[in-house]
Image 1 (cartoon, rainbow, N blue to C red):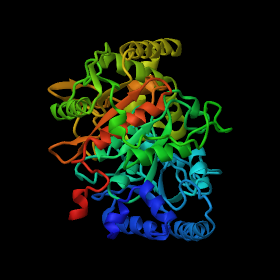
Image 2 (cartoon, one colour; image 1 turned 60 degrees about the horizontal axis):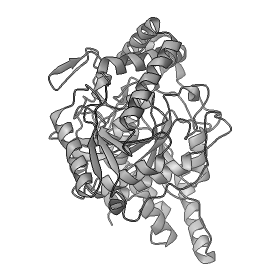
Image 3 (cartoon, rainbow, N blue to C red; image 1 turned 60 degrees about the vertical axis):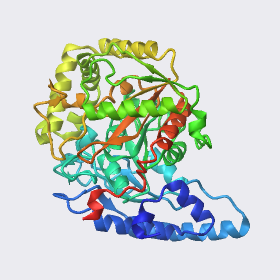
Image 4 (cartoon, rainbow, N blue to C red; image 1 turned 45 degrees about the vertical axis):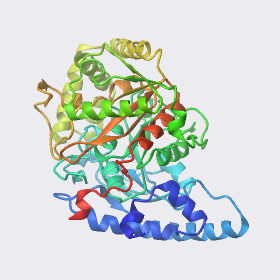
Length: 489
């Protein structure tokens, strides 16, 4: 296996090879580090997925992990669930003693006093944190660029963004620069980049993965895993999930594996899958629509019962709902943390202005009523199905350095706000629903297309089972082993 092939090895296979002593954690870390040296490039023209790396510390941990595997093999001892696996963390996830700036000039040089709960759990599970990934300012955009970190680009097409706000995580995974990555999602920030990079992103039910107060109390948000396969995503989700004393919104057991069927396609039979390409009246690019319908057809041919689904949602309703919410919580937090709106990137200034206007028109109490209306409408639409299938993004790409201050044109329709180029935020409103974004195709521009598998509140297992079947039914899209064009230059 070449270094490039090893860099794209999935975590489940790597752990199996570690335990059998066929592969050393040092070899895997060296492979992803060499890959990053080769393909990451600079902040102006390259992928630019990392804010910093910790290779000396990581190699020492990899050596210790290799020693542990030798001892475990001799004594037939169990090992920690992520022992020796390279993990890149989103920059917003605190690492004790390391900078925590979130792309904000006002935070330059700020140092974290303690690990974020998900970092704490990854370390305890033996994961090796070797790098941090880029974000837009305060994770408030679906593109990933900022004056602090530069422009992050999509390995599949460097003119395009990997999405945001977890764009660095998606780009690093797609390019083989890490094995696993952390992410977060408040309007699609995990699923948008997963879709654009051909990776898998999971938005867990609210509180299932612990966050940091006070913003962990924002019921739209949630931290989560990204990976190149559904099985790897399930593995990292099981490590990250569960009640944590720091976050009183967190719930459920910790460390319980999310089981996947041995034959996910066989397990799919009889599953009722609702298909909604537009979630009401979203505009969707024809290529995205074709990929979503194709995935539904594959599921149906494998034994699922596909049910066309109508939702009463409108773009105006969705935008009014989410911006009112953000105007009462996230936008004021950004204003306070940035030390002044005029110091922010233009996309951040636009977001705060739009959210502030929405909050002026809609009280917090009225905002809760808007949330409840969308939640009720989704529950009614999904009453007779097991999962909902829909696109992740409405477009096939966004420009890598775009601000989209004038909105965006989608399928011959102009939208004043570019966030309507994603079909993700409704499931932050309905944030008890688990959602996975999985690869579903590739557009003519080379950028992957993702589809969302949406479950009923708290029903994680079913979503992972259907997503695993979708993955198995696209053998011509072996995303973990495909080589992005940037690696062939």
